[in-house]
Length: 332
Image 1 (cartoon, rainbow, N blue to C red):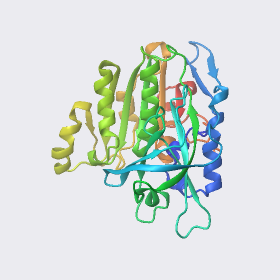
Image 2 (cartoon, rainbow, N blue to C red):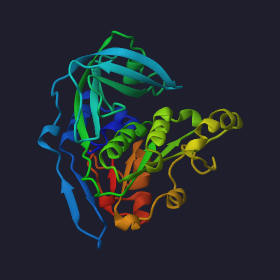
Image 3 (cartoon, rainbow, N blue to C red):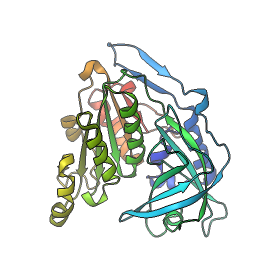
């Protein structure tokens, strides 16, 4: 929570959380116009770009009332909120899409609007949102955390953020997720695994501690269901003995990587770490694609900042230093 594609990840950054409702809505709505490009880096080949299909504009242009089906604890500051929609929400070709959520917030003159990514982009008439509450003064997070079954909330979407390349165009996908950025990353990974049967997927998550890993069971299910096609690695910036004993054991099957806590307290993807674990830009004849999602600061350090109007911007950061081409990287 990018062009508009980063709309789903932007809700993780303090800067985006401070946007007024109108600006947040405009930024997320821009997702309908994003273009997905894939290419081998020069000199291996030229760029092939695919514009979104005509039906990938926002399906419901007006806010609709959704009913709360459940609101359950997930981690210490996140909850899973399931909503029933008045009609099916099922983007066909775009595996990453978000919805805008609108709610009245005490002390605000106008309703607050925030984008959230459902856990799956193929959800029928129910969608489940992973909602993080950023402290006791959080606006939308507080409202959504306190909803009860049967309550109503207004949503608009889906807003398309990423279109799957043709099958076979990419052999290895690497998804780099920071914090709540894991939600659109899971959407993208599921889309790839369902529709490109020869592609393999690596998912790297970055969090403070094992206790902060989001969608842990969902990631474990993907690794179990797709076995040799999926590898999940969880990286942490801080780890105490009691956390290692209690939570680290649960994550061990998914290749837990324990970082030196003095390197980055937030478990940021450092150059040394990514160089060790990423494929090289020329591996698989260059048919490698990296998708990055997380707080704006993390995305900027890994792949360069997005533009002020949420377009992709130039490739920068660690991935540029490692030799990746701009057409091998997408910032959600």
